[in-house]
Image 1 (cartoon, rainbow, N blue to C red):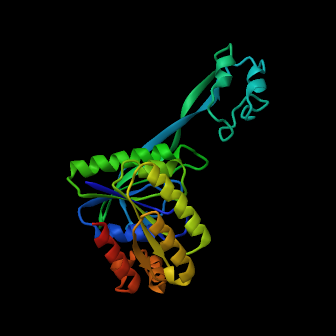
Image 2: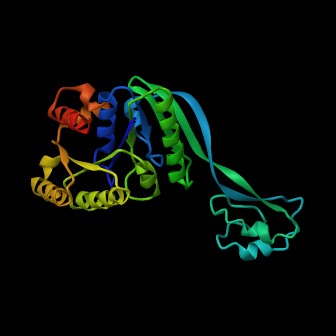
Image 3: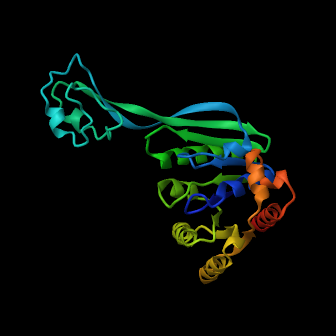
Length: 282
């Protein structure tokens, strides 16, 4: 089983378009959408949910009004102003530090685990798909990413699948690190802009820190050939292969409007280049 993570360093580079195409091209695989804060791979894969599970993470204080004597000690120590004057808890302000419960002599405050989101195992016409949805204003998305990756690996081992295709989140934070942990290859998808180069460099440094082999693809490379050249020069300096340069193609937009991957929608330059990228990855 080989695990391939498609990452970008920044949003809007076309990472999910590439991941969806790889999901179509790869045989005998499981797909994982690790962008749990703003998942969108399901828009291309059209999953049919088979299993739904709660994701619990973090804690929120709860005050038992029958035990509370309204002494005000909890009000004085809460730095997040999560305890209201009427001694109720504002859940979105509570950081779960539990200090209020420690100083309450009445034992009127308890900590309850939050339901921070959901994760799913689904079927698609491309194969099994593991994805998740983080609840509004919830944190610990890195923990949720680790959970669905674990589920995907177990599924791949159980069904003797050859690949785990991971759609990673943008940026370089905890969810990205959780997406990269233990993968066999990271494919960085960037765009020919200054911010695209800057953020691709940062995420390549993260992958390099974990000694993960990195490949790079430039999406819409022909919109700024000069910047594409700078990206290629940087990759040569870092010994990172540029395995694809995808031209700007309006057919991609038409495919997205119809909720299809570009490689199954039409035979075009962009689709041909992604096919070549997959052959190189294999």
